[in-house]
Length: 140
Figure 1 (cartoon, rainbow, N blue to C red):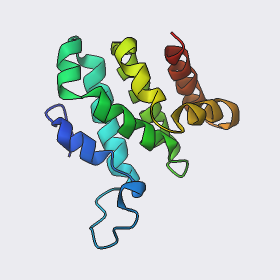
Figure 2 (figure 1 turned 180 degrees about the vertical axis):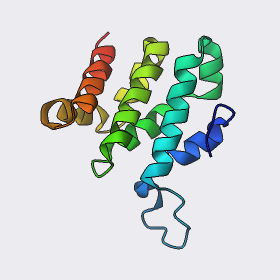
Figure 3 (figure 1 turned 60 degrees about the horizontal axis):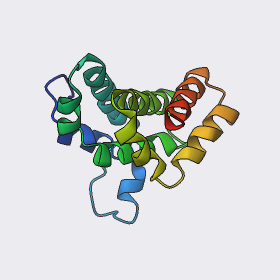
């Protein structure tokens, strides 16, 4: 479904969650945690393999993708692998250029609190470690 040739629209569509469909029962819910996980894996792989910041930001606009990634992370019903993938995606994206991305994370209501709670109350070490990394990047 997703791969190295996936376009940003496909990945953004894959990040859609349950909250995107609340109150719209007539629409077909085309989301699943598996679909989110696949989109996150594709996004993360592309971010890790790309060595051109301008190309990343042209394809994945921070103002669009960081809020979507934060909303995936803030879904406390999501499986651990989805939350971990979302936290990694945010950390990888922020690593590319922290100055232009940190503000986008802070602007998402509840995002910073969600990362703090993940550090404090998360039984999964991977999610907690990625949350610490995001918080460290936000403090730069």
